[in-house]
Image (cartoon, rainbow, N blue to C red; front, side):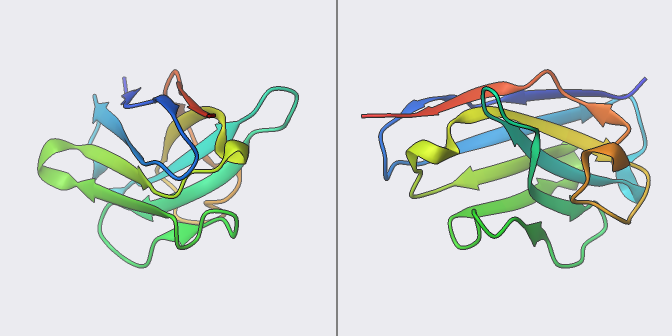
Length: 124
């Protein structure tokens, strides 16, 4: 059974940085793609970034391009999201997700496995 565990959320001031981690276990991830999504109160879950386990150009939502960087450490089966220049509108619960497919990576329905989420709050 695939398990995803996020960590690294917290409270940060506008302009600050956080790094989220997603530890994956219970599967062979060499053929998987993984993504980050977020959900703010009263809003739908939205795509943030995605990366394939074997390489290729990462995908980013327009709202985070130039500020967020997705990466993965294959040896540790861990994915990261480095978030810089955080804004109050980045406040949300952040989820990591995994899929054995390689298409439609910006769509939540394309993912088979989800973590429990980690809260990110950007406020002064």
